[in-house]
Image: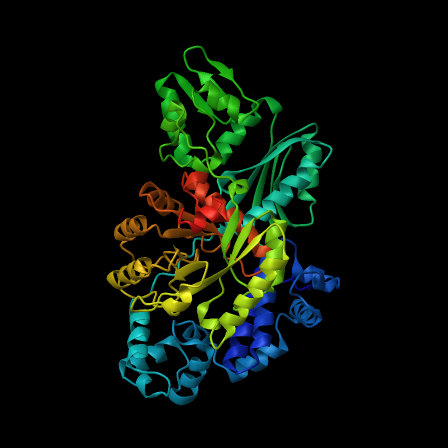
Length: 570
């Protein structure tokens, strides 16, 4: 009996576990990092990585070398890894969950295992309740209290079963481009939640018109990314990719393309409100057209613009279709002119290999210049710029800035907001930076009052220009921490401190509703990539999408202004 090839998600989970157990076993950090990077690449791949490895082609993926390819082949052939089996024999798997408790990490977890016999979170809780953690060198009463707080009142881990926009969007854009290039295609568009740029998506919808619908559908179901054809007919098909994305393609006559595109773009709430308003005027709206109830006449529309005009509205950008006032604004012709990627002049939050970035300063600047930006702020973590490194980095930034044309390179920094609200860099040093981002990176389980106070303290620091990823959420992994948002908005507006929309796919923080509230309160909004690699500079586009969902215009965005105006505090 032939063994089924492991799915990409199964391969990625195996390499993540291998990395975890290696860390707990005390292995070199380079090895575990390599496996984690491989897991990330495998999870993101739309084609079967096991199949690529068996063909000797997995090394074409960034982050997959020969050693990892051989391990993928081993997994495909045997269902397990010899290296993983050996680690399981030495290291209890329950320690992986212990290691994820905030404030512990692999070294401390290993120490707890060796000295206290802790092999699970149940053991850890029992040891903390008995007051035994404080006896371990390097730990104390506060650590013990934090562990107990986490284990008894966890910040919820949020799992929606939905893919991140940052993962789904590049896939669907490439798919749409390939379908458009097919000779049978006339018009092709993404639809659904990905077209609205929702932060997570479940299924992907694509709407098309074609000279030959059957030919286009055959092409769609034969694409390399297709792991399974779930359904196929003369006008629609459904397929699943190797990384678990499900795609529905509908091919419709050109005369009703606009009706179907509007319907399948949604949201459901927007469509319901649209239909209810139409009913009051004697109309019935569906994906097939608009029916005048009295006469039974059906009118179809080739474009969305025609449809919205027929119903008495200005065309509504997909990002706004959430039944949040957009229909009234479209009828009154008061919809805002939303910010676009081309409005942005700079990126004021990115990292290099001076801290936890993957690319050099020169590489990041060259990539940003290639994207057409006119200024960037290098904001490596303050905690990794001690012992003279800050001064040496400053010299390098100034050298690169003086030698490159077309882009201004700024000396920034990202500082941690400590438990008491102070920052992890002295004010004297902060005063010398061009741009300062202050962020919470620890203490997510603090009380609402404590976390709010911490951020307010940072806002009050005259050297802080922006609060980074203000609510600390990680989509599908960690809920936002508890904050009293109103006083934060008031203080940020008073001081002119910007709040960030962080473009990292698993952050998109601020979320759209918070960003809209902040802008309405007069708070400056920063859109940033928080890039840790040259490719991640594209996350700036995700921040723009989030800002559009928040109804924001270019006038409300800090980095849509020239640096001279930003430097002068807007």
